[in-house]
Image (cartoon, rainbow, N blue to C red; front, side):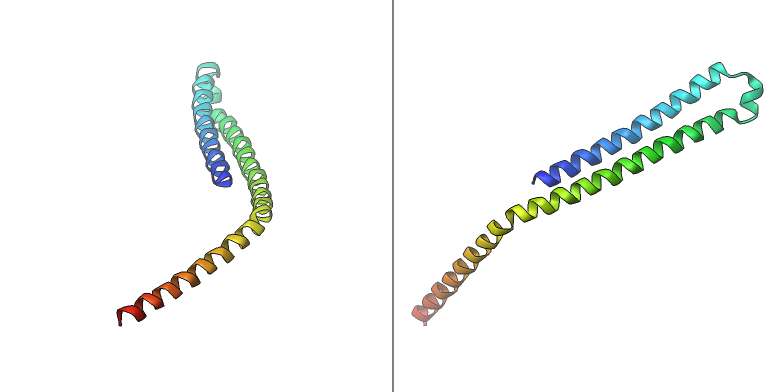
Length: 113
């Protein structure tokens, strides 16, 4: 339903964010290799910069997931509250139909015997 659609879209968005992060880290690494002097490269300055960037991106993705899950749970509760009366009515109708089917089945069984 709508909630599943939103969940799938958000998961796709997170995957895209992770792919973009990986691409950005790769691009950053190439850029830093081209701009930093050899001495800074040897002192692992590139790794430090990239790890800091990855930490910031990872934190952003985690916070985004957390916020989305809270929103999704809220929407899910609201949606269920809105359709609960309809679900109850449908359940009662299905029970009535099931009873009628059982009654018809007994009548058919009695006629066959």
